[in-house]
Length: 203
Image (cartoon, rainbow, N blue to C red; front, side, top):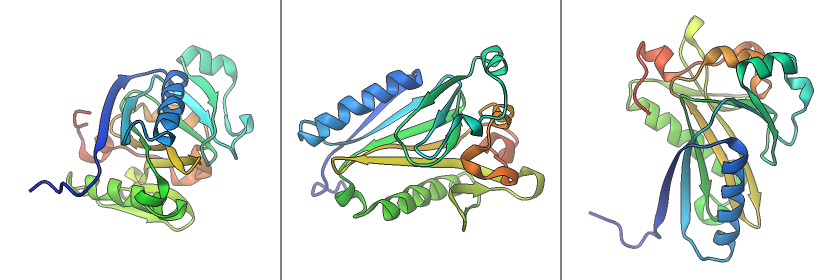
């Protein structure tokens, strides 16, 4: 049965979009949400290879030269989300919820916790047991050599509206994560659904 008491949610799958262009779409839709001209919505995108620097990140978090990045076709963008440095690329599902923080979760820590929980429950449907790390935000999975962060989370709140969100590693090029210290997790590493399942599911 459909719960008609809940407000509508728009789901917009934009396909593969360059990071800067997607950021401008977020900003524009955030202003539309502030003005109450659109309901809460979720943007789903896949980015070409890009390293993004959050509010606490710096170029020092990038471990390779600009020549290496150019050769691999990896762009770099500074952004207003929380956190340090992360990588986005083909094979990731990137989600940008744009909605009223108070209605979604009440406060930012609870909102981030709920994003982690939603991703963990989604991974469980694929037989992947996910977990949190006490010292790091995001979602972790796998054991031994296969273990690592499988989803990164970085959000921003402007005028009480959320933007940015999560990146779930379905089947990205994990070698590109070696270009950075992803979210400052260092030796914890990264992993993907494809790596854990032996075969990547369709995005």
